[in-house]
Length: 111
Length: 115
Image 1 (cartoon, each protein chain N blue to C red):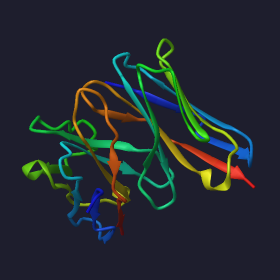
Image 2 (cartoon, rainbow over the protein chains, first blue to last red; image 1 turned 180 degrees about the vertical axis):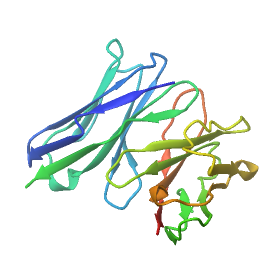
Image 3 (tube, one colour; image 1 turned 120 degrees about the horizontal axis):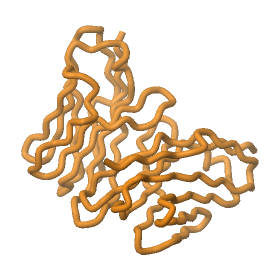
Image 4 (tube, chains in turn orange, yellow; image 1 turned 180 degrees about the horizontal axis):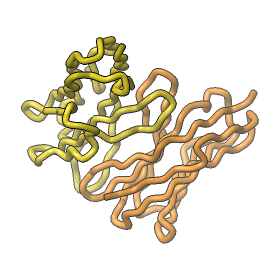
């Protein structure tokens, strides 16, 4: 089955700087790659996703890039703000619609 | 409601007791997942239901854990003879099944504490 690895496990950035989280996946048939944000005491919520037919997608301060050849995808957060502090999960889904999640990344934005 | 609903939101139980956790997925979502999240840890896959197919139970940690999904909608996760290491947040998610992957919507989770 699909194996998704996510790193670094913890990332601290100064407010205003950029944060980048990278995930790798194992199944070349995977075609859908969502990113979730989990705030304390809440369930994860989708913040951005990308499909295998595009290489990059952007939504305001958040962007995701996909490299199918290398089987990795990254989340980019620009101009980080304190409210960006959370745990971020990447996931990969193949044609069977089964999502496999990474272990999560704790992002801390230092004011 | 419009989202995935889980109940109870919090559950404290004594070691050795059985517990049932409930998940009401979004109406029309045929795929349903259960995950476990220990304090400060990632999402541990437990079980996956997809339509009428046999569920993928490969993530259940022991035979004390079981889950069912009645009528393709509500799901119940049952933990028998609870142990302290079962203490965690149990998250349910649902999604629309399709040819391509689609977003999974998560509930708020059930925080289980075994004392």
